[in-house]
Length: 136
Image (tube, rainbow, N blue to C red):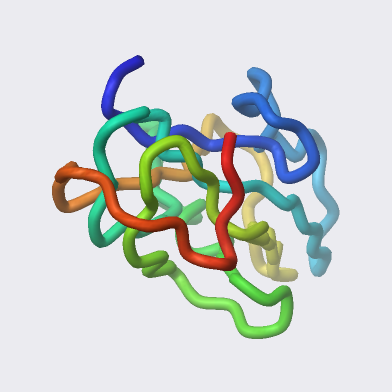
């Protein structure tokens, strides 16, 4: 298995299906949440200094999808990026929340797209399993 990070559904032990992060038609002044996990798919290497962010992927950045989405580790405090620390081989993070907040001034038509991106600074030899992570 490759030394990569993957986005997993919070309740399933498998990568999120296509369209998991698509909201469909949204209403102005509304919000919604999705829960997911970040998985280290390596069976040998620890993913060090893992971070998660929302990035724009479409040709238009106004309104910025990255600006209308926030991330949380506890479902109460939300930020633009999350630092998860290290993920040992074959483990997933604790559940994370993606929140969409659509302001009343948003322009809702157009090909605005985004991606939830998990990155690691490096992959190194394995380490012990922290208590808040689960084995794949």
